[in-house]
Length: 189
Image 1 (cartoon, rainbow, N blue to C red):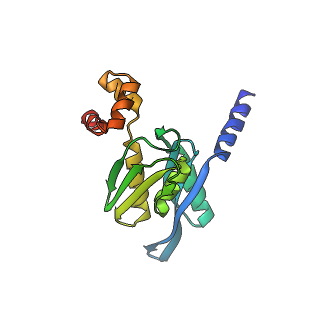
Image 2 (image 1 turned 120 degrees about the horizontal axis):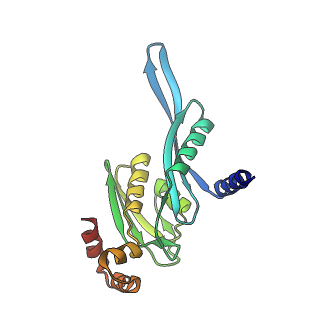
Image 3 (image 1 turned 90 degrees about the vertical axis):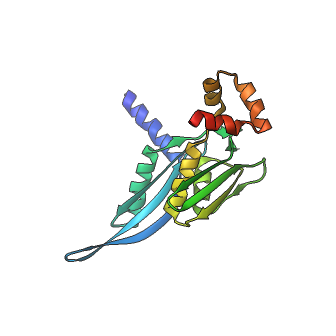
């Protein structure tokens, strides 16, 4: 009886997830008998409250590829520390392949200023105010992966306070003065 309730809770949680289809491509594999045609789907899944995942999958039909990709994305979700539940904690950048992304915090009311693939990630994540810029490759896969690398590198104040042996209000006071970037670099080394 307990397992039935747990499965109902899992179904409710999965129904609340936001799925964004970033791209669908037709891919072919040349084999001895001709060409095998399949579809590749890139899907972003998030709960709108700070958790997001991404995955790509291939199948013979588009709906099957989307279903496989969303299932993989649900298994690979990460948690991102958001400031006031609306923006990221600090400015970050990341590079994957030839794609380079910059993510900046924004004041309330700014909205999501981002390109297509990055916008899907931010909407699934639940970010309401952010400014982002993509430089270099326009490849959807590289842009989304670079965005995930940048989001994964966001350091919450609780972690910094524990590493430095200080209290969280002291860390937040330093953050407003702009000294937080140097302490983040010290922690990563």
